Length: 161
Ligand code: PNS
Image (cartoon, rainbow, N blue to C red; front, top):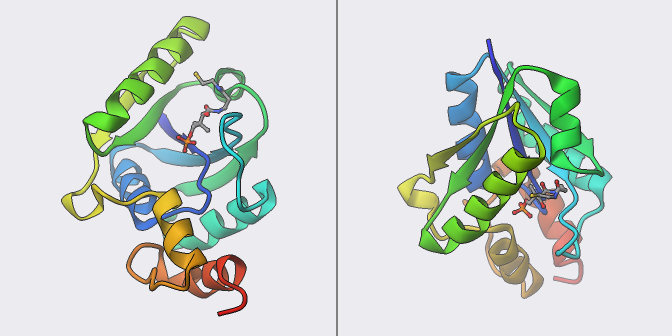
């Protein structure tokens, strides 16, 4: 069965990401959470930290594994074989950016379709940036990130609080 690749910065992984990943794990034989580099963003967590957090957050999902790749997504996909890119769409504001990436990836590599899952109603507003801002000022991010990695994220993002 096809593999779903869920690419993203995951800086850090949120409940919104986890919702998409766990729903993809029911639709596909296996899922690769691909922690990638977005050249337009300065990450707060290192690639290794983001991978470790994503692993801990998804360890209860047996057909999900976490990998990282510092290169073009399509080059990773070429090495993987039969797969689809799965991404979450929150609102119209996501659409233009995600549509651009889907079309560019398709132009670069015809071998993988992009499939969008509608974000869960509880996660429409949620983003890694929001989590980072709230945590930075000592706000409560429980419910925004998986419980298993909550303390680690709080410690890292609001160390003095
Ligand atoms: O969570 P993000 O930051 O929206 O994810 C964007 C990401 C990391 C999936 C995208 O920037 C990406 O695919 N980066 C890898 C490099 C690449 O292939 N860039 C061209 C995308 S068309």
